[in-house]
Image (cartoon, rainbow, N blue to C red; front, top):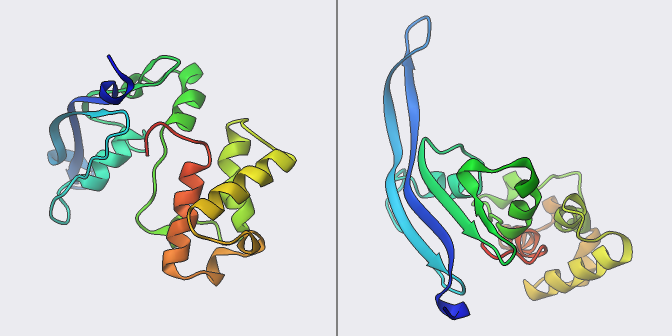
Amino acid sequence: MSNETKTLLEIQGLKKYFPIQAGFLRRTVGYIKAVDNVTLNVRKGETLGVVGESGCGKTTMGRCLVKLYEPTGGKVLLHTPEKTISVTELTSQDQRLFRSSAQIIFQDPFASLNPRMSILETVGEPLLVNGIASGRELEERVKEVITQVGLRVEHLRRYPHSFSGGQRQRVGIARALVVNPSLV
């Protein structure tokens, strides 16, 4: 199987239901089916767009894929060069590999950026947390990725409030790309 046709992400019957609770004791009286039985494959190098009306579960599905939400059912498999990781049954030893292999770009960049952290700190944090780089190497990698997303190196010491919405989105993209993930 060539690299272009190799499956990177495999989703089988993914479900995410949110409980509806009512009454004094907050008993579950039903469920909202945000994601219901989604199955798809994404090949290496492939771009997939998920389209739907507001509130149909696109973001919820994305959050399930990167383990920000615990899926109600189904299976999510991420095929990395090292091994296949079951995202829905993530072990502590696979956690670091998964976190550096799959990244998410949040819809609202201002809400996802810490106002007390400079852009250098924000974009460099995933490198530190995942033990990929520190010091001079970290700064060089951040400079490289900041330039790739269309920002200038002079911006590294600035804080999120001093950027436009589009620039903040670029910072969020840089933060996702800095660890060179297999899946964004």
